[in-house]
Structure formats: C-alpha cells, structure tokens
Image (cartoon, rainbow, N blue to C red; front, top):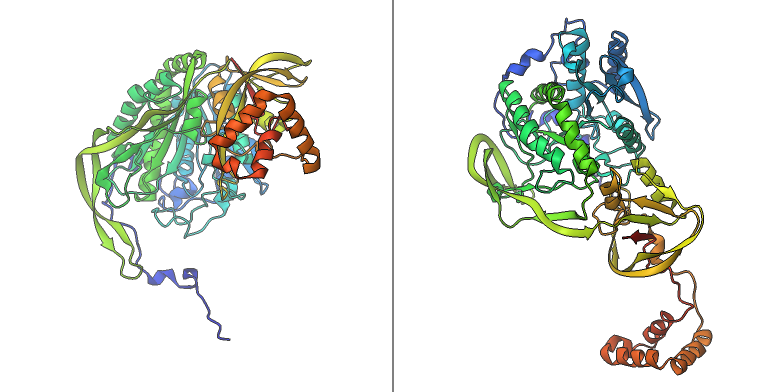
Length: 591
C-alpha cells in the first residue's frame, strides 16, 4: 500500500513567505509616543525594551510587578485565584492606601487585561501606567480615585504562547491563546461562571463593587481607520439606563477627545453585517450577560468593552490603551460621585417588566464612518471569494448601523423565584454571583406559577463546554407544597435583574439555557401493558368526560388515531401514576 506523507504548514519555513500577509497600514506618529521609555530608563517595562513589539511572559510580567510593588506603599498585589494548571491569578491594588480600597468611599476603577490572552495590550499599557504613577510624576492620578488592575486573567492561555496564534493581528511577536486550558472562552462565561478564572473575577466584583470596569480586548474582522474602539450597552437597551446615559453622554465624548489629542483615532465597536459588502453596515449590538459589558450592565457595574484594532501595530495599540486608562482615571476622579449616584439609581430601580433579549431594528441609524477601501478578489488556489483591504482611507458619509433595540423576549418580573433544595449547581451559581437568598426552614404550601416545557431542543454540539437547551413553556398557577430547604430568591434586591437573567428559562443566558437542568427531560419510572390497560379501561368507564376528551382527540389528531402506543401515552399522562415532575421547570415563580 502506498503511504502518502501529509505535511502541515508548520513544517514549512514561514520566513520564505512575505514578511506581512496583512493589509497595508499607514505610518503612525501620535503624541502618545512620548509615553514610551527608552531601554536605559531604570523602570523600563519588559515590552518597552523591545520598542513595544513583544510582550513579557507570565514570569517576566510578575518579576517586574514584584519589583514595582516593593518600591511603593501605593501598590499592593493580591492573589485572587488559581488557574486550572495551578498558576496564580494576581490583581494589583493601587491607591493612596491600597488596604482601604472599597472602604474609603473613593471611586474604584477596575481594569482587566488578558481575558483573551492573545489580546494582551492592556497588560503592557497597565504596567507602563503603574510605573509612571509610582516612579514618575503621575501619583496625583490616585488622589481621588482607586485602581484595581488584573494584568492577566487567562494565565494558562497566556503561557500557551506562539507566533502563529492570531493571523489577523499585528503583534506582539508572541501571542497567547484565546481560550483557557479547559478550552473555555472567559468572555462567554460570566453568567454560567464555570471557569476558575471567572469565579475568581466574580469574587472581585462582589468584594469591591467597582464604579467603572474596563475590559481590554483586540478586535477580529474588518479594516478601518480607527485604532481604539470601545462600547457598552447603550441607554436605548441597557438594564442600567442611568449608568449607560453617563457612559454615552460623559465618558465617550471625554475619552474620544483625549485619544484624539494624543494622536489616536477612537471609534465605535465594529461588527460588519456582510463580509463581502461592508457598505451594508454594522450591527449596534445588545450584549447579554455571558459577556463582560452585558454582565456589568445587568448587575449595575458600568462596563466598557475596549476593542483595539487588530490590524494596527502593537506599539500604537498599547500607547492608545495607556491614554484611555489614564484619562479614565482622571474622569472618574472628577465624575466619580455622579457615576456612583447613577449606579445607585439603577440598583434601586424595581421595574415591573424586563426585556431579556433584543433584535435588530429594520431602520438603521446613518453614521459617519472612517473606513478603508476594499475590493472583491477570488483566490486562484481555493476559489474562495473574499474582501481584500487596500489600506486606502475611505469615508462613509452615511453607513447604516442597525441597533438591536427591538424587544424580542419580555417578561413580567416575578416577586421571587423558588429554587428547590436539590438544585445544588444553581444555588452555587447564585452564591458566586453574590445574589441574596433565603432558605425555608419548614415546609409550607403557597400559590405559585409552575412552568412546563411544551417544545424543547438540545444543541447537537458543545458550545463553551456545555450543550445548550431551548424550550417553550406553558405557565400554570398551582398550590404547591414547598419542602424545607427550598430557597427563595427575591427580585427586590440590587441584583434582582441578574437573578431574573439567570433564573428565567427563556432568557438568552439563563442557567436553563446553559444546560444545568437536563433531569427535567427524563422519565425514570415505566409501566407494563398488562398493568396499564386495566387502568385505562377503568378510567374510561368511571370518567365519562375524560373518555369524551379522548374520543375528540382521536378524531382531531390523525397521528394519535393511527398509533396504539400514542393512545396509551395519552391515557398514561392523565393517570395519577404519571411522573408529575416530568418536563416541569424545577424553579417556581412567585408573583
């Protein structure tokens, strides 16, 4: 038998290929370049030693931070968790008194880098900024505000480093991996909170309750002129409308101005609708609680998703991130009390109804957009048709942006949810999120709404480590005897909307959707024909109305009429022997 040896591309020498396979980009020389220190500086960061073309390893990063923290009483570094591979996850606390952060009333800025550790701009920008605060002339930044900085959240992914991880990203030379050692994408894990890294982060959010939360990423996708883009759930579809209004009316214009003055071009988050025709427009997404800015919105922590443009050089992106972080500190020092009041107003709101999911409007907003010209090409080898970006600036005077602001799933907010005591995973998740609960000491009977699945489907392949579930439900009111140990989750609490998002099964990131309750779809008791047939005959003889209902059903349903098994199942479902928990959602609603 002939054996064919198949070589992967990694077997070839990539140096034989073109030096840069990415679209061309214009030279950049912004004012923020002066922030970069030369190699001879006593506190030069590891990335600056290479001219901001590389990023340090985990060990190199924390060697520098250990030295920096030891040099100043304004810094302290805490271990907030341990990764699946056993690496420590650290957070730097920076303030005039780090031990009083969260207690002294000063506004708190949380900056998180490396949730996707190939997108590591925030780490190197943060190291430079901390250096300039404690070893430069910027200590005044922390007079009226505190900073929490997580340099690397996905530490295992960070150490899965290589040159060929992100083919659509211009630097650094070595890049970490997008997912964790357990192959979980942390920025899809906020609601289900399965990763150890995410559980560590939730403890930080619960303990410190930051007033502003910045999550630093690098984009995928299209080419355009903007180098720093950022966004959040807008007031039109936010669960925290007061904070969203502050972000839209104060934060965005102030940061845009600061970035422009430093030589950068800030812009909106860009999610193209058609990979072959950019002129069709972009999405104005509503972010759900699986994502950082969706999660922050629903638990009333003003959260900004920063997406630096992957096609811009690493140096340019890092310096732009530095400017954004510095001016976020300045703005929070000035506006912190205003933002705290907005945040408190959102926490105190108790809406009677809640929109859980949105769909895009058919009517776009037309925006002015600084894009890049492109052309459609066909690859000679594969026949693939694709959009090639030319690097030439192109201004779209009226680019359509389709906002996701049309309600798709709406519910009346219940007074409370009742979680049965056997739902240990659900109760553990609620505790992780910091949601308040009370446990029933003795059994009692109350009128509750029970949900029964009428149509359901299961994912055919895993997504983020789970097989998701979707269903439609019939809702009935019943007197139900709750056992001792049942847990009441009131929606009359600051995290009430988060409780709804996790426990309402039709919500896009509910624990039900993430597949935490598969047992409700299984029946474990059975019957034998010799036992059920006499029961059916007896029921038909004694209950004339039920017999008539059966006859009418047979006339109306051809499938039922033609199947003896279906007829037996029809009767079985109406006998007292039928499993009364089958298809019943194991969480009850109190209105």
